[in-house]
Image 1 (cartoon, rainbow, N blue to C red):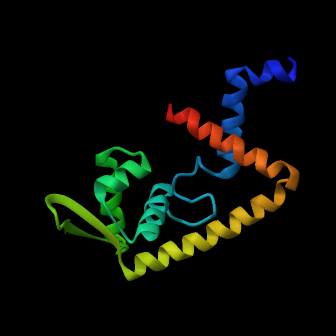
Image 2: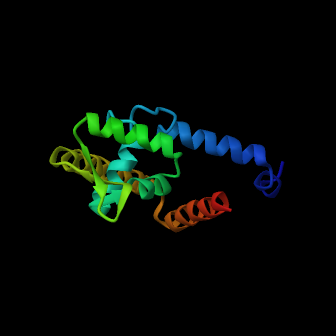
Image 3: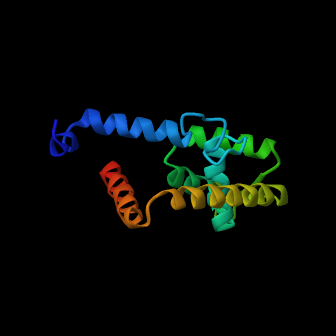
Length: 147
């Protein structure tokens, strides 16, 4: 099969993505790809909250692209770890605002540092002349998934 034919074969795409998921460690849901012993979904939630300072739970749901009930369980897990606190939304009695606690901010900082180190090593492993192409391919994949 020629290179052009392979590029049009959905099985080839499936196999390539499967290989990426395994190589990057995304199939290990209780550990982040950067090796931290925390579920990937919790790491993403911490990252979003650290970036924004506080978020409504409904906004966290949208950003994480998860179901409302899944995020509710996720927030419960983060709260039980002492990393997140819930507060009523000031403008909506039914809404919930989420904030990191001091230990949650520390956990988010530790995760961010581990991520920086992992992605720095990964970037260094990609030949400099191919880096822009890799980033472009990832952007194209995200756009295709958003359709």
